[in-house]
Image (cartoon, rainbow, N blue to C red; front, side, top):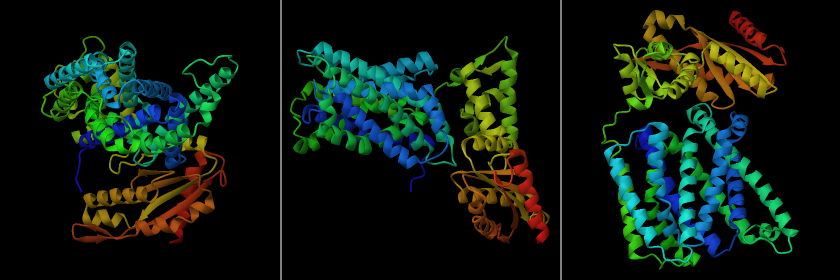
Length: 552
């Protein structure tokens, strides 16, 4: 198996999303509109609703569902996605999917400008040259469009590029998804979040479309291109939309959200320049089955497509070669607001102390580059501070990933656990709490040293997380005491897990050619079965644990 870095995974996801799913989606859009004669609005709604259905079923019940539904990011992304999809369908009804794909690459230029103006992401020389090549390709294919509807085609291509750009940046900045991406205890959180994103707006849009169709029935002469009730029963629309949503849109949205979160929106937009290759490939390979005419691609289109592809490859393949000064993106020289300077330095100092001066771990926890941390450490004049937006993001990451986490095991600490406990009680009617105290742990420190003891505690924490990856919270309260909160478990259900926990902890531990064995005493208390007070729940579980320990 290839051991890919996070950045490499992000780029790989982008390539799969564009070369496979976007290419197929472009061809499917043209086939649906020109051959099946579907209504683009209803087709899009069916595709998005079926996409939402499969993602929500895969994600199951869990956290972030309510937050996703309330987030303005969700509504903005959904609305933009819906309009971009419909505009794309309209564009492909005038020209081939290949030509439409080439014209849409104006979004690469728009993405570069937007990232520079709004996010202070200074482009490197390769990015500028690659974008210039792509822009020349777009101009060439625009000149080569032969249609009496040139004006409409240009407008639709520009609108699609704008909507696609806004959609990708919204995916990068989507706050519930950013939380889901960092949630190691809930691997299906991303599917759940994106499922609700797709479901909310597509359902609302479908209802609005149905109301428009009802209004059309009252018209003596229905307005052209607006949906009618008969469009809702069109077999091709329902079938094509359903299949597209499940097999194309769902994986495409997962890859898009994940990739933009890792490599940033403008880089993902750059990879879309390669969609020309994908569209040509899928359009030609599917032509015998779809009946789509692929002979209308001129040599000029092929030349323009080659330029656009070359520009995209130049940017994608040179991202690691360019030496970027990213300091300006995160930091500013502050001469007046000394509180910002103190906050910046305190966050970095406390984070380094938390992780025993491991800069890479601090970088991961705060989600900032290691070079930024080094710049703050080496700031002898003490005039560097995080920019306002960065300070908010870093402060939040510090609170969640450091202030509420145990430095040794990475589990929740007591403060973080109590906060999550109250949040869980607001969402679930039943909770059960296991309170664990390790047996025979002191001899480990006495015999093998404190490094061995730390190794054992880390391993125990990892084993507990593996036992309960979902619907649970695992914490190290301190010393050799752990807690497991089972969300949605009554006392009987929780009691059935006690032997499993005991057996997992008692598994032999290998440390430097030594076999170490520890056990545990476990106390159990349930809410509201044993107490209606969250304050008493931990105390009752603690007392129950000491009873078990005394019985030994």
